[in-house]
Image (cartoon, rainbow, N blue to C red; front, top):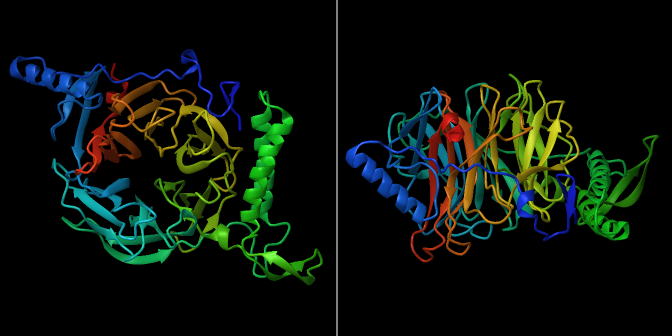
Length: 494
């Protein structure tokens, strides 16, 4: 398959020339203390950091580093949420509570979907403190993997924890769930949950007696596949026949799943007059299961809340929408592209929503992008952005000043480089980029830093949590969730 990059097209596996890559400004001009032993210590620490191939906050041993960028104080600090463990820890999320405390969650166990001991864990960082609490269980379905938590507070000041349980150890069997708490500002331990339910995903039309030929979900996928086929074949350096062969195979696979062809049963085919005849039809099991969480909900207005979802079974995205605090749900048209999953949503001042999505499709790797002008119900054709992505989760936040900040792996290959970028013009350009982590020691030993979650706090500082895995310490405790706090001035600092 072929994708466009800046008007050029490349075959899968092709590499861009160096001068065709997106410029990245790294945070190498890091603030140092200027006097005596403090200067010597900071210089020593910087040398050690560079020797390890890592960029980010310098001299942060649970204390902020302060400098200046223009007239604004620069703030940055990092903390490991818990000591290194042997278990797999991944998929973290964070929320700031009304009292200034932070609450984080992640999944932890002996693996991912094929490990039945995986649970959702959490920890608190009380306002003004420098150490996270001891981890505690946030949710656990015994004997099943619980994956990818997200935390958010709705317009009624209720705390939500949403995640998914993998029913049969395959992503296609994921079942999204949520818990709600109104008593969550405890000094220690998990929130007190007042409600728990399953998010029953029902895209497309009703299909009590089988999926009908005019089903909206099926028709939307058909239309978007054809639109995407034109997009990738435009100016492509492969023949139209070869392109059509790839698209037809892709089309058959997606539509077979959307039409329920894995569950053909006796049904009733309805005609325009409402009469029915008996016919073997597909049922909607596949498209109602397997939906997964990754990034936080977005509050569109005082009523509407959108939960970004994705499906590894379909390898595309979908939005769950509620206008009544979760009492009822509706679902957007699917966002169909070549492996666009794990959406994260930014908001423009005119109300337009913009989704950035992980690229699980062919190279060259770019974050996918789509926009909505009707509060998330329908979305523009999925296209490549100019932002690199190695097939890893990314997260975006819209600041109160209208700027966007994206946390992501700014490479096409590997999770050794974790960056934050600022756009002051709603995604047209990304003027400032700085690395939170950068390890250049080589793929087999470089520390893996990925799957970030980013929010803005009440004091305008930014909070990011992410997986931090030491690949050079296999067999030893080597994994944790890392937390970093900084402000926009730190990203902009040269």
